[in-house]
Image 1 (cartoon, rainbow, N blue to C red):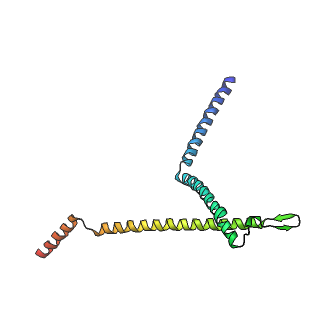
Image 2 (tube, rainbow, N blue to C red; image 1 turned 180 degrees about the horizontal axis):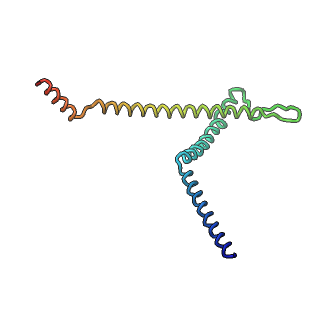
Length: 152
């Protein structure tokens, strides 16, 4: 009976290894798909871009806006309601951050779309020119055809 248990245990281990190997290969295939890699790159670049825009807002734009509105610092604005302190200045700051980030992304996408459309138009024009140009063989064959028609 001990031999049977050992054999069943070996068989169960073998099946578990097989399932684990299959799961591992499926996971590897999933990770290596283009969409997952593209998404990872997008998240990393988005995080870096977010830091740049946050620095633009915090270090450049907000001090200028503060000067324009009389030195008012949004981040310290608050209201005391009973025992709570409502920090609405931080909320205003986050709204401004969001609007600037959204505008930067809008401009970035607009530039990329414009460049993509320009490349498409250039490619279509090149294809049209290639179709319009007849090869020397085709021109010669058409000339022969036309001469044969005249001689009949």
